[in-house]
Length: 338
Ligand code: ADP
Ligand code: TRP
Image (tube, rainbow, N blue to C red):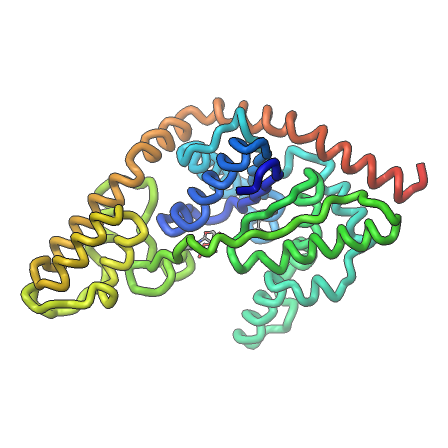
C-alpha cells in the first residue's frame, strides 16, 4: 500500500498517551510509515508543539509531554534513520509558509473548523460568551496544519475521523493557490482513515479517553496497569452462568490486545460458564503486559537518555528543513513575482 507515497503524521504533545492512543493511533501510524518506506515512500513524523501552545502555557509541562511522546514513538518502533522525525518548532519555514497560506484561507473555513466549533459549543454550554478563552492560535489552527502538510509535498495524511476536515481544508487552500498561479506549486494531500483500527473501550465502557479518566495507562508499572484492569466494570452474575462475551467489557478490551486464539479461548470460556471475572481480568492483564513489555523497556531507556533523542530530533529537523525550504521558495517566487 502507498507505494512511493509520502506519508505525514503530526501529534500534539498534550496528555500522557494511554493504551487506546497506542493501539488506535501510535502503532498503526508507525506501521503505515514502515510499509511506505519499504515500498520506496517516505514517512514524516513530527511533534506538533506549536499546536500544543494554544492550550498549554506551562513550559515544564510542554517539555515533559514532548519528551514522553517522542520516546513513545521510538519505543513503538519508529526508525529515526529511515523516517523524518522532528519537532515542528525546529522548522521555521512552517510559520513562514503559514503566513502565505493565510492570504488564501477564507475566514469562513476557520469559523467552520471543528476544533474551533467544539470550543465555542463548550462555551455556550457553560453559558459563557462564544469566544471566551479562545486564542488566535486555536482559531487559525487548520492553516498551520495545512502548512505542516504541504511543506513536504505530502500525499497521504493518516488521521482519526476528527481530523478529516482539517486535511480537507489543507487541500482546499493548496488548491486555491495552485489555481491562482495556474501551476502545481503545492502538492494536494489526501486523508486516510484506517477502518480496521478499533476504538478501544475504557474501563467504564465508554471510549477510552483521557478526558473521561477511564484509561489503562501505557508505560507505568504493572501495579498501576493491574489496578486499572481490576477496576473494569463487571456484574454480579456467577461464573457458571453462560455469558455472551460481546456484552462483557473485559472481553471487548481483550479483543484489542490478544491474539485470535486467545480471543477465542476467552470467548468460549465465557459462553460455557468456565471463566469468572477474576480469571478474565488476569488474562487481560497478561495480554496488555505482553503487548507493551518490549516497548516499555525501550521507553524507559529513552526517557532516561533523552539527550540521545534530542540528537535524533535535531538530525530529523536538519533532514526535513531543506524540503520545507524548497516549498517556501517556490511559494515566495510565485507570490512576489521573484
Ligand atoms: P483522548 O480521547 O484520550 O483525548 P485524543 O483525542 O488525544 O485522545 O486522541 C489521540 C489519538 O488517539 C487520535 O488519533 C485518536 O483517534 C486515538 N484514540 C484516542 N482514544 C482512542 C481509543 N479509545 N481507541 C482507539 N484510538 C484512540
Ligand atoms: N491537529 C492534529 C491533532 O490535533 C495534530 C497535527 C498538527 C497534525 N499538524 C498536523 C496531524 C499535520 C496531521 C498532519 O491531532
